Image (tube, rainbow, N blue to C red; front, side, top):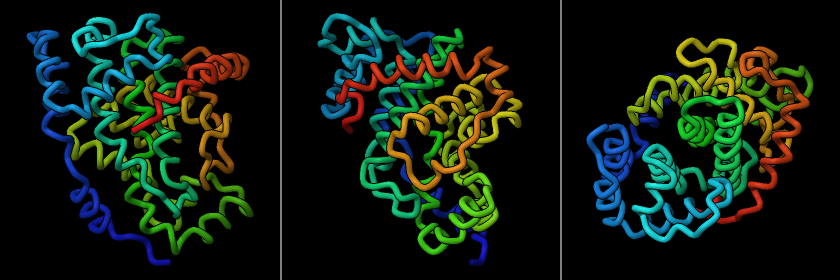
Length: 282
């Protein structure tokens, strides 16, 4: 198969819709030191669907709040501006990530469920290792495979060739993807992150979540994203074609002062968080 021209990829990334105006406004408010809780609430309640989504996420068990959250202002007080921002971003990409991706052997909603699981795991790991921005880790985990939405189009013809490299030559999937297509989904995801004007650290985490040892901007965030992704694969959450030949990065473990025993313990705790189905509805 002929490798894909970069221009084709860039054009497809350009066609990806930008974040809705409401979500852009929430991101801006969350980053401004002058914003108030009322500013956040006034913006969110303009969108009934987003309001319902924020309240549903805020009441899901992985945020760990024992009482019911019934208003946006209450959610903002309890969870904080950054969590509200990450929930709004999740709501805006849920439809895009819910499509069937036959090239990756992912049925409808599989990528969304897998990505939301990874986001929850990344936030959990971040808190365990005392990373100062757990909600940034949530977004990194959520978006780490967003490039698959674009590359899936090309995988229909290339799947056999990629799987042959993975299964018979034991080449990691992301490297086989690059050998056959000329790109891997992390690089494409990085381009999407740049289109959405996300921070460089998030773009790097998406680009390098399979190769955390190459991180330069924020190695800890990339390591957290990589390990969350690995745990999702270990748990067998909607494992598609690229669940084969997955490898841990020893460097990522060392950077976060973790080992496989600690990860196994974390995995058991994350499984408990995943029992709440509300976290996965889009």
